[in-house]
Amino acid sequence: MEDNYRTLIAGFLAGVLGWLEPIAGDVFTLIYIFVLNFFFGYLADRIANGNDFNLKKAWRCLTEAALFFLLVASIYGIGKMKQQPDAAIQCVSTVAYIVIYFYSTNILRNLMQVLKPHTPAFRAVDFLYYILSFEIIRKIPLLGEYLNSKKEEEK
Image (cartoon, rainbow, N blue to C red; front, side, top):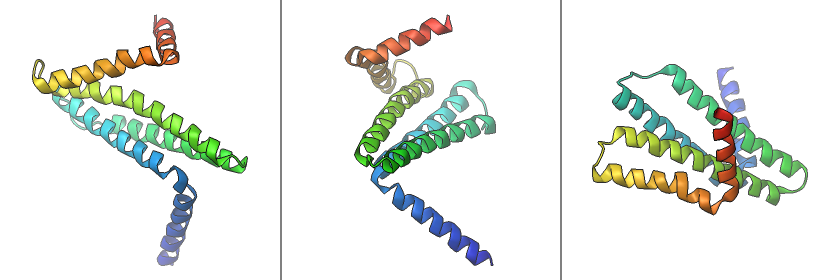
């Protein structure tokens, strides 16, 4: 009986993965960025703050990742049902780039907490963070407007 459940689950997962194959690159990229975010977030919390593993933070990281995977799969699924798979793939790619941008800045910020200040590694990461945080905003005006509006809301 247990083998039947395993077979059913394996068949279901294979079907879902086959259906999502056109966006596999984006899905694997998101997995990679979420693993890096988890790893460097843990390191920063451990080294900079002296905290042990926090299950609540880990659960939040996994929940956020699951929500983005659900969002991406839903976008692709809806686009495919509307007979517009190419547009859906483009939309999924856009969402993936947005996630990569925001999580990369978070990863770099966490990495700066791990590295010793004024070392070459710290300065390299600090420069990358500067580029992502400030210079890219000049190239993407809508991003700058969005970040400025969020700063105003926080006041």
